[in-house]
Image (cartoon, rainbow, N blue to C red):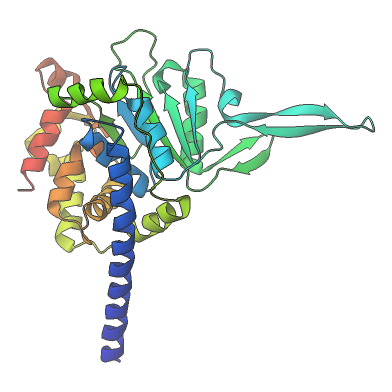
Length: 336
C-alpha cells in the first residue's frame, strides 16, 4: 500500500511539473509580448501578471501618464482576453457599469423587460481612475469583483470566466478623488505602485511611440491557457517554512502581542484574506519565474503590494513620521 501511495504521489508530481513547464512557456511569451510595448515597468508587469495568475484583482496607483491604461489594454491582447475600459467620473452611475433592464414592446404589442449588459461583462475590465467615481458606484463594481456575479431587478447574471479587474487610482492628494473604503480596498489582491521610468526607458519611449509606426502587441495566450495556469497555481506545493513565513508576516502586521513593539504603531492590520492572497501570489510568482515551488524570498518580495493597502498606522505613529512601508520593512527583516 505504501509503495502504491508513493507511485501515485510521483505520478502527480510529474503531472504538475509537465503542466508547469507548458504554462511557464505561455507565461514567458506573454510577459515578453507585454514588455515589447510597455517600457521601463518590468516590476509592474510582473506584479500585474502575478495578480491575474492568482485569480485576483489589482489596484494600480500612480500619477497620470505612466502607461497604466496602456498596460491593461496590452495585457488583454497578450493574454487573449476580452478587455474593456470604463472611465470613472463623478457622475458615473452603477447601471453604467453593470447594465440595466429596458422596457421593450414586441410586434404584437406585448411589453417585456430585456437586460442590456454593461461593460463589466468582460474578462479583463479596466476601471480607469476608480477613485473619481462616487462611493455608490465604486461599491457596485467591488461587490461584483467579490461575488463574480451581479443582480439586477432580482435576476442574477454571472460574469464571464476568467474575470479580473485592474483599476487605476490617482494619488489621493489630487482634487476630485474619493478614497476607497478599507473593506473595498481589501478586495484587491495587490496594490501596485507605478513609478516614473528611468532615463534609458524614457528615451526608448520617445523613439518607439513618436515614430511613424508603433509596436503592436501579439496574443501569446488564450483565456483557456490562462485558466489552466490559474488552476496549476493552486496545485503548486508550498513548503512548511514558506507557510510559516506567511503566517508570521501577516499576523505580526496586526496590533497585538505577535507584532511586538511594532504593534503599538498599527491601528488595524490585514485579515485572513491577506494570508490567502500571499499564499496564491507566492505560487504565481514562482511559476512566472519558471520555478515549481515558492520560497521565503517570494514572501518578502510580495509583502509590500499585498499588505500595504490592508493596514493603517495610528495617529501617533503617523505624527512621528512613521510610514506603512517602513513598518512592513521591519516586519520583513524578521523573516531573515
